[in-house]
Image (cartoon, rainbow, N blue to C red; front, side):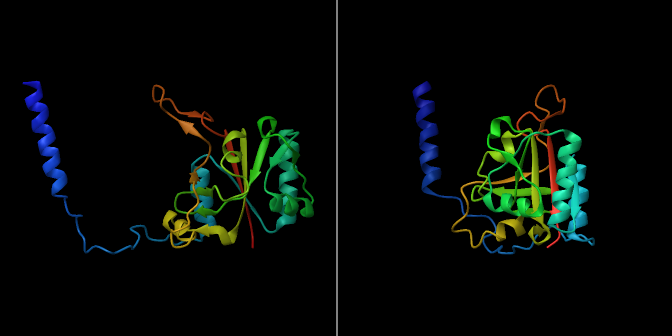
Length: 207
């Protein structure tokens, strides 16, 4: 009896595979986003949504102001070591008067990275494996500091993906960081910092 039932199931599967189901709505080629751009500036929309997700946002008129704000943050938090793997970003910060110094990600107080884009609609930081920081820096440090520029702002996630080109050479990893790591898997209690940084800062620099 069991063998008969098994044979019937396999027969139905074979028949179904022989007659593939056509793709629904084959004529639907409209790629228009269902989300309409907001009426306020992207900088403001990103900041509002990022802060709602427990992110910490700061706007800088130039890199000198960025360095000054980083110095003040480091002093008030009493951080001793900040890690940055991106040579270009380290040189820009050093030129503006701020040095990172830490060489070990596992023992740093905070890590600094750049990003690919800032997504205003969701308040998310879009990063990828093609960045010099790689896959680990923004995740393993207890505090993640992202340095971004105003020309990296996009409205929607689709706009960020469009920035990678025609899709034939996408990075092996694209990720969205929307505030600190958090989960409610255990008894529906929200816990921050379980799978990633407990705090995420975004310094947006005018360019």
